Structure formats: C-alpha cells, structure tokens
Picture 1 (tube, one colour):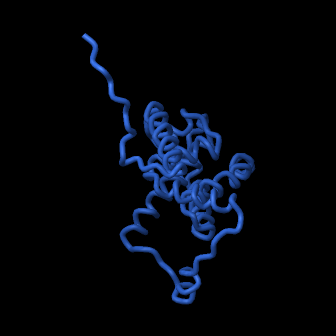
Picture 2 (cartoon, helix red, strand yellow; picture 1 turned 45 degrees about the vertical axis):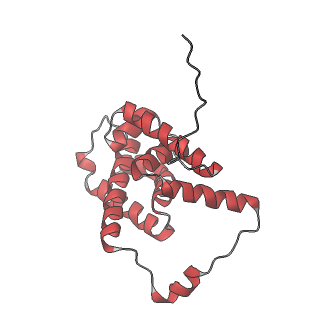
Picture 3 (cartoon, rainbow, N blue to C red; picture 1 turned 180 degrees about the vertical axis):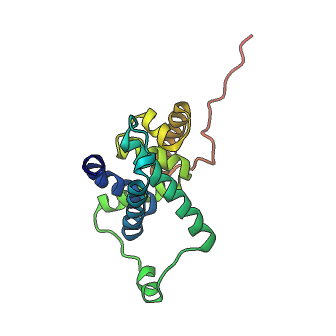
Length: 176
C-alpha cells in the first residue's frame, strides 16, 4: 500500500490540471480525478509492475473523461435553474490578459477532442510524445501530427484568421 501511495500522490496535481483543462468545470474535474484514483486503487494489481504509473493514471483519466464527454453530449448540459440567469450575464474583462485568456480557452474548446488532448498532455503536462502516445493508445507519429495541427489551429484562432479559408497563394508565372 505504501508503494502505491508513493507513486500516486505526487501525480494528483497534474491529474487535476489535465481534468480541469479537459472538462472546464472544477467540480466535474475533481469528481473525474476521484473516479480515476478509485479505479487505479481498485485495479492496482492489474498494473504492469515495470510500467510507468504516470502514463497508466493519465490513460485511465483520459478514458474516463472521453466516456463522460460522450455521455454529456447525449444527455445535454446540466444547469441548475438558480444559476441560469447568472450564467447568462456577460461581464467583460477589464484587462487585456483576461481577454487573451478567454480567447485561448475558446480556441482550445474549438479544437477537436483528439487534438486538444494531445496539446494538453504535451504542452501543459510536459509529457513526451511517447508517453502521450501510450496514454492515448495511438502511434507516436499521430501524436506529432495532431500536435502540429492543434498548434496551427490555435494560432489561426488566436490571430482571428479562419482555417476554413485557405491562405492566398501567390500566383506563379509559367516559364518555358
């Protein structure tokens, strides 16, 4: 039991960060981390002893998050009636950094889930491409291509250019 706690406890802040970035709701993210830790403790004996606990825990968290997002998409968002009026009020940020942060969060939300997961794991959590590939159960090359596409899309969204409109290419003159 001591070995399990020694391996899991230092990873909890990173798991919470990743869950909050994926779900955008601190309460749901904390519940997701709790579910992840319960599953990890309950299935500790199934873990590969020589495997990386960090990769294993992030894979559990990611799979639970995907399942939760799919369920939420089928059911729709839950909003208590008391919070409805307050949630519809828009308060403009007073600082430019607040606006940039809001733009970044909107850009992250606009990314497909596959690209967002790769971007968060590599850039925010600092995982290697190989670790990210293990967590998401995809090839390393796929991690690199999704990360590249995610970065390009974030830049386009932050600059205000639309990815649907192709960049205007210079006309080439034909020389014989």
